[in-house]
Each structure stands twice: as structure tokens, then as C-alpha cells.
Length: 309
Ligand SMILES: O=C(O)CCC(=O)C(=O)O
Ligand SMILES: [Fe+2]
Image (cartoon, rainbow, N blue to C red; front, side, top):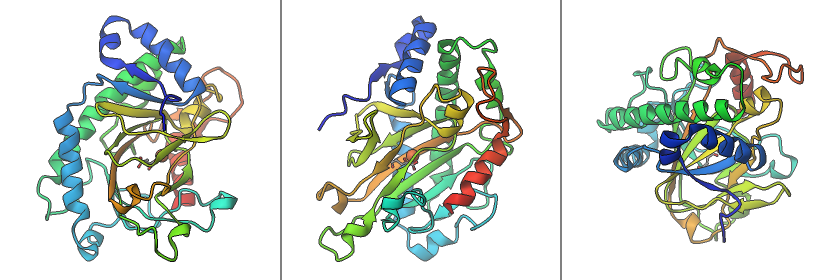
């Protein structure tokens, strides 16, 4: 198994020394592959492990306890616990319509203090620390991409994501847990961990544990493993950034499979930081074309959520 189809980029040293070249490299990768591993990203390992640790404590609580902190179905409020079977990322793919996604999640938005699990006292602090670090990295990535795209308005990405972490911006740190699956169970063939999809927002930062199972589609429509690589963060382009760049940058499809019989017997955890522009920002094609009509970032996301939940 190889992960060679997804390049690894040393973020830290280049961000200091040659931001422009780093931007050109990232844009080139986002145009072709859509995914990149970043090393020397500056997010402390203990911050990442802290968030994984308190997430694990949360997911180990009983279902009834977790449901006290549930994401209310059918509302605009995205924060809270999402039990197994509540969402379908692959709802519209013909050949996947019979699969069930065995995944639970907690959507963390730092300004909503109403659904914090009191059973895990360190939950808020550990997730909030990772949220802040991820925000810093996302802004640095945006600065580079704007340079790499030679945009006239160099601050457009940073200034359109000003409210990350506050009301008015839906950027979410989503902690995910994939419960073990018994490969010999009668319904095992109908189960998956995460159906084929692309992400909705501008970019996603993904922290994975060591279990594996993530697959990313290449240019020949073949899904290849995106193995966990210690010390790196996987970053990918979402649908809204693809639309904003008139399809120059690629929002690549991905999934988490049950193909590895050993891996699915174990719980898998990941942390996905889904970055979105401020709700009231209007996304217009950056090349001045009318390939896609202008859309309010907030309305765009609400429309996507309606299809998922
Ligand atoms: O768990 C993972 O590794 C990926 C999850 C994912 O792609 C998503 O939630 O959008
Ligand atoms: Fe995803």
C-alpha cells in the first residue's frame, strides 16, 4: 500500500523562508490532487493528543448520556453529538445507497457552551485549544494559496474567514469515532465507516489516528489509501473553494472503508476541522467569470446540510 499519490509538503520552514514558492506548490497540488500532507505545521502534538484523549472519553460514555448533548435534528444549529446512522454522506450515490455508515461524531463550535459533556471536564479546553491552533494554520494556508493564485485581493481568503470560532461563522471541529465492526456479522457487507463524498467548505484539516481506512480518489477515478503519516496533517480542498476558483482547485472525493479486516475490529478516531467563510460573505468566482452565480456562504452550507441530515 502506498500514499505516494498524495504529496508531503514541509510547511513550517517554507512558510518562514519563501511563502510565495510554498503557495505555488500548494496551488499546484490542490489543482491536481486536491489533498496534501503537511509536516512542520506548528500544531503541537500534545494539543492533538489532548483532543483525541478527551474525545475518546466522551465516546466511551453510554449512548443515553451522549444523547443529552445531541445535535438537534432539522435545525440550523450544528453543534453537538451525532449518533450512528443519523447522517448520510453518500445519500446520492446510486451504488452506495444500501450502505450504512457506522460512525458517531461530536460537532464542536467553541462559542456554543450549551452541549458540553460535564462527564468529561477537559473536553472544552482540549478541543478549544486544537480549534485555535487549527485556525492559525488554516489562515497561514489561505495566505499561501492567495499568493500561489496571484490574486489581486491578496487578503480575500483571510478577510472572508474573519469570524472563525464566533457566531456568524460555521467552521467546526468535528471529532469522529468509528466503532468496531464484526467482519463476520450477517450485515457486514452493507456497512461502511464513511461513504464517498467531498467536503462542503473551503478547506479541511484532518488529524487521523494510526488505524487507517481513509481512501482518496485519484485522477483516474481510483480510490487509493491515504495512510496515517505521523507528524503530518492532511489538508484538502472543499466544494466551496472549488466553486470559488471556478473549478481550478479540486475538491476530491474520499471515503473511509471497511476493507481491512483487522482495522475494522478496532475503534478508529479522527478529528476534522471543516473551514467555512463567514455566513454573510458572498462567494463570487475569483476569475471574474460567471461559471457559478454568486452565493451566500451561509445559505450554501445550509442547503448542503439539508441533504445530509
Ligand atoms: O475520518 C476520516 O478520516 C475522514 C472523515 C471525513 O472525510 C469527513 O468527515 O468529511
Ligand atoms: Fe470528508
